[in-house]
Amino acid sequence: MALQRSKKEEQVAEISELFKNSKLTVLANYSGLGVKQMQELRKNAKENQTKLKVVKNRLVMKAMDQIDTYKDTDRSIFKEQLLFAFNSDDEVAPAQVLAGFAKKNKDLEFVGAITAEGEILSVDEVKYLAGLPSKDQLRGQLVGTLSAPLSGFVNVLSGNIRGFVNVLSARAESL
Image (cartoon, rainbow, N blue to C red; front, side, top):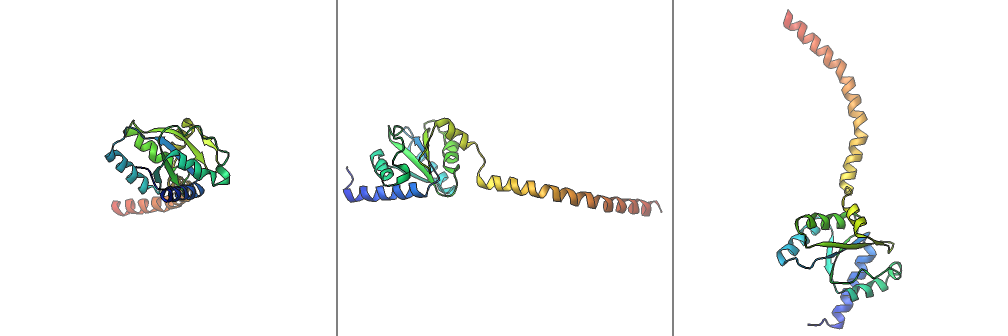
């Protein structure tokens, strides 16, 4: 059953807003996935603040026409029914969510991605992005790197005191 014009306009407005707010939009072919698999994928995406949409390509192209950044974007990747993954907080989260799911479900295949600047990324570039650490992982690495010299310094300073205490306890046992 065809969508009414008002519903189509609502979808175009929603997709347009998602494109405006998203740092990276990943496109994937999802044909062959069952309902349970799609539910699992949506659950994984929601946990990572990633929004998934399945919309007709024609409506997506209309939404892109409403945004200056995307007006000149190459549209040759819009060939079959696609799944669009949006995230407004993290650049690599949509790619990571879909890549993690694709490891278990071979029916999900990357088609490409669209950056916030309107550039098209290839499948290999999307897979590379999916392999990058997330923002939280990078923050943890930064904290560890910054705290390593301090913890080493504390261990060096406490080493003399520890040695002195060990000598005193050995002396006390020998008496």
